[in-house]
Image 1 (cartoon, rainbow over the protein chains, first blue to last red):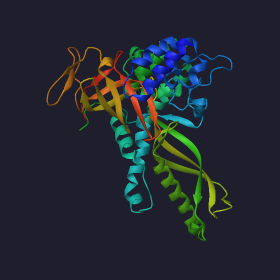
Image 2: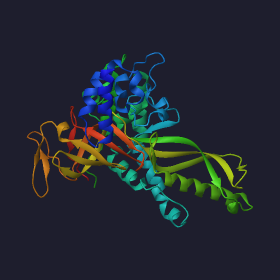
Image 3: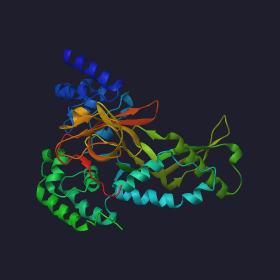
Image 4: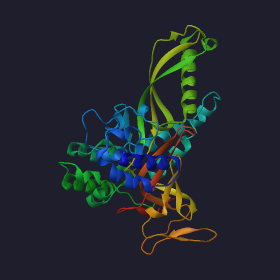
Length: 205
Length: 180
């Protein structure tokens, strides 16, 4: 109980103050055994990643469990499976989709009744500046097979977005991969060298 | 990262908009959907709403008893943006403070990178302050930095996310972006 109270305080202070992260690291380390309390402690859900205790934890399983019981944000990790009706998009894929809508914008804006979400521009700008590939389909076809080697959809998207040069970089940036059974570096190395072939000159005229 | 989501929503059309001719009706439903979509701005589960991409299905309308409006169940696809713990992203510095910097990552205005998560960096005071490191490029306003997301927070009142990011780890840090 004492341990839990401590966590609650830290959780409270973490959630009420912007930017403070000290509480998070400490509490996560202490939280390992205490799953029952996690329904309130959003940010500490990460320590339950990959483990389930029968019936007790309400917040396990990332995106699939109901978030409605938790008044505070609990976070999905990038290495968890997303809910079924969500699909990850690589930044390059999103850039293509959003640009397509932007192209229709002139026509759309003629109709004053049509409203465009406020975040659209920022989203488009980010997608375009973050996108490092001119050929999303090629990237998809290179990385998709990695799903057979244990990577999740979202991990594949992170790899595409970051555009690592070596398998080393992949494992450094996605430490969760190291923990997974069945992940070996060979398929990832192969994919990285395939991706490297796609690399275009950075400076475009 | 960007997400493509398929959503079932209920769109309510006021009786006044129900003119004969299905084309006007479809338009009314679409306009209503886009309006509702834009108004929503963001949700905790799906992140920031960016755009509706396709309309999959418009179901049969049901008249609502007391108001006379008609409710149409609609299924559509949309693009959203949400960041996840553990994700590696690139953000642009827009504010430098003594204890850290604020980055913009897409629609997220305030991703905080604390100085405690910038190993090796020290704050340099000045008119345009920045963080400096012996071995790495400096972190200043408008610099692009590759970070890892340590945590996220959904703020119900403002309907937006904040993120906590860090540089602890290999291959993270400022990127010398040639074309930005």
